[in-house]
Image (cartoon, rainbow, N blue to C red):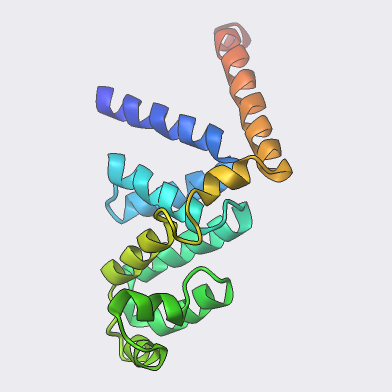
Length: 173
């Protein structure tokens, strides 16, 4: 019970500091939990997806959905890759760099299903690591006007919950 409480507390802090819509993060977390992720792995994946999405809620939802579907079924990788490529999250150049091959070879690997989910996740980690194009993007976007708005909305929600909980027994009477 203590571990679950700690994880929920860490999750809540994460939601409050991201600048993303809390519903987007909660939806993603549910999908990742369905896949068996827990604790630190879950939080690291949410951070990874937040950074790779550029810190925007719409891209976060799309990337989270693709990430979860991709892990569920790598048979669909060529289709999912096209979707991720269109949104600028992962490119043939990223795959080529990861494997140390030309982009034509990377394209053939994608089409033949030679890129595993572990490879996809490693490429995302490379892109979000220091020097990668998405490094600390979640933090950067949290400081944008939209990010600050979502953080403000989350704080208001927390205040409402904190003020409302003590009144609950009186309202139920």
